[in-house]
Image 1: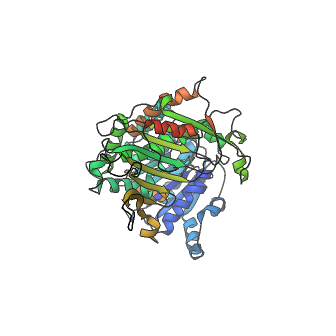
Image 2: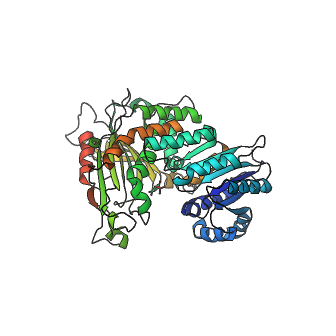
Image 3: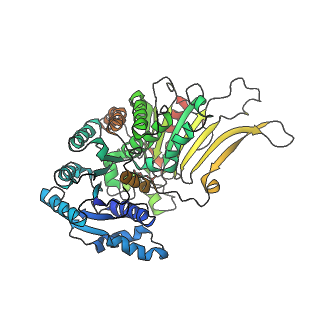
Length: 484
Ligand code: BG6
C-alpha cells in the first residue's frame, strides 16, 4: 500500500469546511509523514480558481511553523485544482482525465465537503465518470452529516448510495468517533477486569453524556435552524458515544464486529417521545461580557423570525435489553452554555447496607472527559486522612496532560482521514447504524416540528440551560453530585 500512489479529491474546495478542516488536516498528515508516499491532492469547485487561491484561503488555518516553510511549499506543489459544476457529467469526465494524467494507476479518495443538496448528483457523477478501473486500486467516498433529516430522507440517500457503491467504499464521518477518549471507551471497558462485572443495571444508576459549548451559532444560524441541536449533535455524536458505552463486548476488534454490536444497542433503544425530552433556546444576556453573549439565538440575522428551533436538548433514552433496561441514558447538549465540555459520566448506585453516617457516602462516578483536556477519573470514597475516621469523596485521576505529558493528541479529522487511506472502517458509521439512529429520533422530531409543536424553554446565554432539564434527569434517577 505504502508505495502505491493515491489521489485525494476535495469536492467543494473553495468552501468553509475545506479551508477550515480538510486542507489543514491533509497538511498535518502530510507534514507528519503519515500519508502514503506519492499522495496528490485535487481541489474541485465551481469557481475558476488556482491552487494559489486555495492556498491563500487556507493559509490562516494551516498553522505552519517557521521550520515548516519549505515543506508547505512542497505540499502545495502536489496540489492541483479543477473547476467544474456539480451536476455536469462532462465536468466529472474532465476531472477523471485530470486524475489519470496526474497518476495513471492511483487509488482515489473523494471527500464531499459540499451541501447535502448536491450529494445525490455528485455521487452519481463520481460513479459514472471517476471510479478507477485499474486492477489493485480502489475508490473511496467520504461524506459527512447531515445524512438526511429524518428516517425517510436518510433512507432515500442510503438507497441512492447503495446503488452506486458497496458499503466498503463508503466512509460516513462522525468526527466524534475520531476523538481520543471516545476511542478509549473500547479499551477502558474491555481491557479492564474491574469494570466488566459492574457495567449493568444492577450497579449503574444513570449514564450522562454531555456536550456543551460556550458560544452560539456564530453566523451559522441559517444552517443550524434547518437542523437544530438534536440533529446537529445528539442524534450522531452523543448517540455514537452512547453506543460505545452500552454495547456488548464485540467478538473481536474487527470493524464489522464492533459495528454489529453498536447496531444491536440501537435496536434495543425505545423511540423517544416528548415526555423524554426538555428543549431550550438561548436568549441574549444583557449583562453579557462579550458582544456575542448579548445576542440570543433569534437575534442572529440568518435565523428566521420567531424560530422554535432548539439550541439545547436533554433526552432520556432507555436501552430495553437485559443489561440496561431502566437505566436512564441521559443525553444532553447545548449551545451558548456556561462552558466547553464533552464527557461521559457513569453514576453508580448507592452502596447497599450503609454503615456510615447518613449522607456521608457519595455515589461513585466514572468520568471520561472527551474535552477539553482528556481525562479519565473516578469519584470514590476514601478515609479522611489523619486522625478522623470519616469517609470523604476524592478522585482517582488520570489526566492525560500529566500522565502523558508531551504526547501529541491527533485531531479527530486527522485520525479519520488516515483511516480512509488505510481502509479501516472501525470508526465510521454503517448504513444500518444510521437507520436505527433515525428510527429513535424521527417520531420525536416530527412531533416537535409539527404545527402544534412545543416552544423551547428560554435559557440565558452562558448558563447551564433550562432548569427543567435537570428536573427531568433527576426524576429519571440521576442524583446530581456537581454542576455538570
Ligand atoms: C459539529 C456541529 O458536528 O460539531 C457543531 O455541527 C459543533 O455545531 C461541533 O460545534 C463540535 O465539534 P467539536 O469537535 O468542536 O466538539
